[in-house]
Image (cartoon, rainbow, N blue to C red; front, side, top):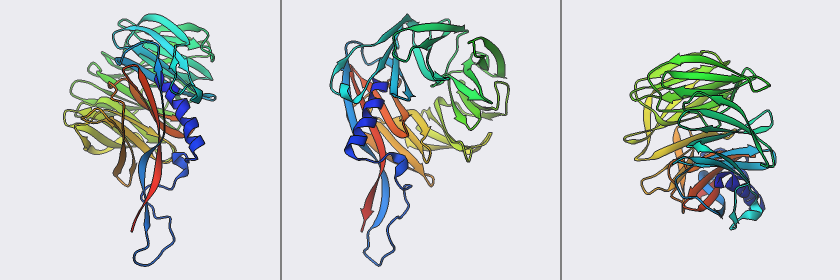
Length: 367
């Protein structure tokens, strides 16, 4: 829950500090100064933390799964304990910094995973338990929730709901491969098997213009499918597992990255349109729990290092420019990299404390 909180808080804090959003800064690595002679400083750009907020909750521990969803009025967050339990929900603001907060809604069950989505302007909570996936529509003020669908079990992405050809659906990786659960305006579902593979161990999905790209891992392989509608699309097979996969794609160029975790650290595969460009490359040794997003100008990637610190950076000309977020040491499911009102944030939960950090691209100079 703290994640949503953090997102809203950080956004306001950065604005108060007069720090430009990442998209407002020049691209990293470009020289924006006037040409000069020897000894004239040259501008370079680096990833940096430009705002921070923190708060505590009235209960819980570090072993949680957190989902953040941007809203027109800020952000909201959902969380569940990894051991199984109720979904809790929060709407938080900058004014709650350094306060202890309590959940505003509770959806009782034995959920172990939750994803937050906005579908046609409505907040949805997609929760996973041992035997099902259940979708609840939640009031904007978190005053109540209504269950609208109960699906067969499987693994979901964050957000759970994706869109292809204007249709909302939930891609689900399960013990048979990949299926999609398409929803109509009345929340009725149609299930379509789009890929048959070995049992899935992890999955992710993201938008690419009017299509959705989904990726999922099995014990020995990784698969990626481009869904131009909730039906089978071009399928790519990668001959290595891709644990904890995450995708980030530039909708205009249809170029992006698939990042994932392996025994040696964080690996990355470049993607383009419906395919991949070459084998995976090691991005960071001994890293874990990667995340990725597209902010409108840059691909951002985060991960946990060997110390448990959150490392966040952006890709520029094939290079990863990163910075450490000091303080929190979350478990892998208790932090996220999210885009709120055009700004990049990390939101993390460590014990009973939440921390939200806004990332910027700031200039440095070399003489």
